[in-house]
Length: 193
View (tube, rainbow, N blue to C red):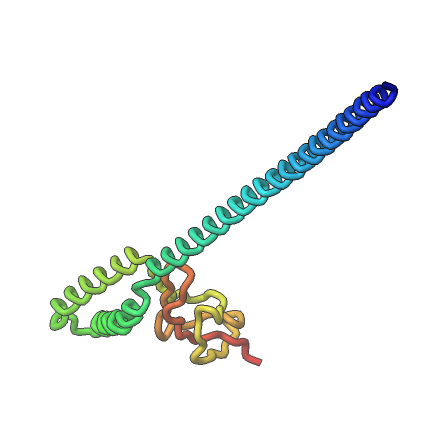
Protein backbone atom coordinates (compact mmCIF):
# COMPACT_ATOMS: atom_id res chain seq x y z
CA UNK A 1 0.00 0.00 0.00
CA UNK A 2 2.71 2.31 0.75
CA UNK A 3 3.93 1.69 -2.66
CA UNK A 4 0.66 2.74 -4.21
CA UNK A 5 0.53 5.78 -2.00
CA UNK A 6 4.02 6.67 -3.00
CA UNK A 7 3.17 6.19 -6.59
CA UNK A 8 0.15 8.50 -6.22
CA UNK A 9 2.26 11.15 -4.55
CA UNK A 10 4.91 10.79 -7.23
CA UNK A 11 2.27 11.04 -9.87
CA UNK A 12 0.88 14.23 -8.30
CA UNK A 13 4.39 15.69 -8.04
CA UNK A 14 5.05 14.74 -11.66
CA UNK A 15 1.75 16.27 -12.72
CA UNK A 16 2.56 19.44 -10.79
CA UNK A 17 5.99 19.57 -12.36
CA UNK A 18 4.50 18.94 -15.81
CA UNK A 19 1.94 21.63 -15.20
CA UNK A 20 4.67 23.95 -13.95
CA UNK A 21 6.76 23.21 -17.05
CA UNK A 22 3.68 23.72 -19.23
CA UNK A 23 2.97 27.00 -17.47
CA UNK A 24 6.58 28.11 -17.95
CA UNK A 25 6.48 27.10 -21.61
CA UNK A 26 3.19 28.91 -22.01
CA UNK A 27 4.63 32.02 -20.35
CA UNK A 28 7.75 31.75 -22.50
CA UNK A 29 5.59 31.40 -25.62
CA UNK A 30 3.52 34.40 -24.53
CA UNK A 31 6.67 36.40 -23.91
CA UNK A 32 8.12 35.36 -27.28
CA UNK A 33 4.83 36.22 -29.01
CA UNK A 34 4.68 39.55 -27.22
CA UNK A 35 8.30 40.35 -28.15
CA UNK A 36 7.72 39.24 -31.74
CA UNK A 37 4.56 41.35 -31.93
CA UNK A 38 6.40 44.39 -30.57
CA UNK A 39 9.28 43.84 -33.01
CA UNK A 40 6.87 43.48 -35.96
CA UNK A 41 4.94 46.60 -34.90
CA UNK A 42 8.20 48.58 -34.78
CA UNK A 43 9.17 47.21 -38.20
CA UNK A 44 5.74 48.11 -39.58
CA UNK A 45 5.97 51.64 -38.19
CA UNK A 46 9.47 52.11 -39.67
CA UNK A 47 8.28 50.78 -43.03
CA UNK A 48 5.31 53.15 -43.01
CA UNK A 49 7.61 56.09 -42.22
CA UNK A 50 9.94 55.07 -45.06
CA UNK A 51 6.98 54.83 -47.44
CA UNK A 52 5.76 58.30 -46.41
CA UNK A 53 9.30 59.64 -46.81
CA UNK A 54 9.62 58.09 -50.29
CA UNK A 55 6.20 59.44 -51.30
CA UNK A 56 7.17 62.94 -50.15
CA UNK A 57 10.53 62.73 -51.90
CA UNK A 58 8.92 61.44 -55.10
CA UNK A 59 6.28 64.17 -54.99
CA UNK A 60 8.95 66.87 -54.58
CA UNK A 61 10.91 65.41 -57.48
CA UNK A 62 7.80 65.31 -59.69
CA UNK A 63 7.05 68.96 -58.85
CA UNK A 64 10.66 69.91 -59.61
CA UNK A 65 10.60 68.12 -62.98
CA UNK A 66 7.21 69.68 -63.78
CA UNK A 67 8.48 73.20 -62.98
CA UNK A 68 11.69 72.68 -64.96
CA UNK A 69 9.74 71.42 -67.99
CA UNK A 70 7.32 74.34 -67.77
CA UNK A 71 10.24 76.78 -67.74
CA UNK A 72 11.78 75.06 -70.77
CA UNK A 73 8.46 75.13 -72.63
CA UNK A 74 7.94 78.79 -71.73
CA UNK A 75 11.48 79.62 -72.90
CA UNK A 76 10.97 77.71 -76.17
CA UNK A 77 7.72 79.54 -76.87
CA UNK A 78 9.21 82.89 -75.88
CA UNK A 79 12.23 82.60 -78.17
CA UNK A 80 10.77 80.46 -80.97
CA UNK A 81 10.78 83.31 -83.49
CA UNK A 82 14.37 84.33 -82.88
CA UNK A 83 15.82 83.02 -86.17
CA UNK A 84 12.94 84.42 -88.22
CA UNK A 85 13.31 87.84 -86.61
CA UNK A 86 17.08 87.85 -87.24
CA UNK A 87 16.35 87.26 -90.93
CA UNK A 88 13.95 90.25 -90.98
CA UNK A 89 16.41 92.70 -89.43
CA UNK A 90 18.32 93.49 -92.67
CA UNK A 91 14.98 94.21 -94.40
CA UNK A 92 14.09 96.64 -91.66
CA UNK A 93 17.55 98.23 -91.85
CA UNK A 94 17.26 98.77 -95.61
CA UNK A 95 13.80 100.31 -95.29
CA UNK A 96 15.13 102.73 -92.67
CA UNK A 97 18.12 103.61 -94.87
CA UNK A 98 15.81 104.29 -97.83
CA UNK A 99 13.59 106.48 -95.65
CA UNK A 100 16.58 108.45 -94.40
CA UNK A 101 17.91 108.88 -97.92
CA UNK A 102 14.57 110.09 -99.28
CA UNK A 103 14.01 112.46 -96.34
CA UNK A 104 17.43 114.06 -96.79
CA UNK A 105 17.10 114.42 -100.57
CA UNK A 106 16.13 117.96 -101.60
CA UNK A 107 13.69 117.13 -104.37
CA UNK A 108 11.11 115.22 -102.38
CA UNK A 109 8.31 115.59 -104.93
CA UNK A 110 9.52 112.57 -106.94
CA UNK A 111 9.72 110.39 -103.90
CA UNK A 112 6.58 111.29 -101.95
CA UNK A 113 4.64 108.15 -102.93
CA UNK A 114 7.65 105.88 -102.28
CA UNK A 115 8.27 107.68 -99.01
CA UNK A 116 4.67 107.15 -97.84
CA UNK A 117 4.73 103.43 -98.69
CA UNK A 118 8.09 102.96 -96.97
CA UNK A 119 6.81 104.79 -93.88
CA UNK A 120 3.74 102.52 -93.85
CA UNK A 121 5.93 99.39 -94.08
CA UNK A 122 8.27 100.76 -91.42
CA UNK A 123 5.34 101.43 -89.07
CA UNK A 124 3.99 97.90 -89.63
CA UNK A 125 7.38 96.45 -88.76
CA UNK A 126 7.64 98.64 -85.65
CA UNK A 127 4.21 97.44 -84.51
CA UNK A 128 5.28 93.84 -85.09
CA UNK A 129 8.42 94.42 -83.06
CA UNK A 130 6.33 95.79 -80.19
CA UNK A 131 3.94 92.83 -80.42
CA UNK A 132 6.84 90.33 -80.31
CA UNK A 133 8.60 92.28 -77.52
CA UNK A 134 11.61 93.28 -79.62
CA UNK A 135 13.50 96.36 -78.44
CA UNK A 136 15.70 98.41 -80.72
CA UNK A 137 19.15 99.45 -79.47
CA UNK A 138 19.89 102.81 -81.09
CA UNK A 139 20.42 105.30 -78.25
CA UNK A 140 23.28 107.77 -78.45
CA UNK A 141 25.06 109.72 -75.68
CA UNK A 142 24.86 106.72 -73.36
CA UNK A 143 27.78 104.67 -71.95
CA UNK A 144 29.19 101.95 -74.19
CA UNK A 145 27.99 98.50 -73.06
CA UNK A 146 29.91 95.59 -74.65
CA UNK A 147 27.04 93.20 -73.95
CA UNK A 148 24.75 95.08 -76.40
CA UNK A 149 27.16 97.26 -78.43
CA UNK A 150 29.86 96.41 -80.92
CA UNK A 151 32.43 99.20 -81.25
CA UNK A 152 33.23 99.78 -84.92
CA UNK A 153 35.26 102.93 -84.55
CA UNK A 154 36.55 105.50 -82.06
CA UNK A 155 35.76 109.22 -82.25
CA UNK A 156 38.40 111.37 -80.51
CA UNK A 157 36.86 114.46 -78.96
CA UNK A 158 37.00 116.68 -75.88
CA UNK A 159 33.35 117.69 -76.18
CA UNK A 160 31.95 114.36 -74.95
CA UNK A 161 33.32 112.29 -72.10
CA UNK A 162 35.04 109.02 -72.95
CA UNK A 163 33.27 105.72 -73.59
CA UNK A 164 29.98 107.24 -74.81
CA UNK A 165 28.04 106.20 -77.92
CA UNK A 166 28.49 108.96 -80.51
CA UNK A 167 26.86 107.36 -83.55
CA UNK A 168 24.87 104.21 -84.18
CA UNK A 169 25.97 102.77 -87.54
CA UNK A 170 23.53 99.86 -87.38
CA UNK A 171 20.94 99.41 -84.62
CA UNK A 172 20.90 96.30 -82.47
CA UNK A 173 17.90 94.36 -81.24
CA UNK A 174 16.97 92.53 -78.03
CA UNK A 175 14.19 89.94 -77.70
CA UNK A 176 12.19 89.99 -74.42
CA UNK A 177 14.84 92.27 -72.87
CA UNK A 178 17.05 89.26 -72.25
CA UNK A 179 18.27 87.75 -75.52
CA UNK A 180 20.47 89.79 -77.80
CA UNK A 181 19.45 89.24 -81.43
CA UNK A 182 22.13 91.52 -82.82
CA UNK A 183 24.48 94.01 -81.14
CA UNK A 184 24.33 97.66 -82.17
CA UNK A 185 27.33 98.70 -84.28
CA UNK A 186 28.48 101.98 -82.81
CA UNK A 187 31.16 104.65 -82.79
CA UNK A 188 32.52 105.31 -79.29
CA UNK A 189 33.97 108.57 -77.95
CA UNK A 190 37.44 108.90 -76.47
CA UNK A 191 39.15 111.97 -74.98
CA UNK A 192 41.94 113.52 -77.03
CA UNK A 193 45.30 113.37 -75.33
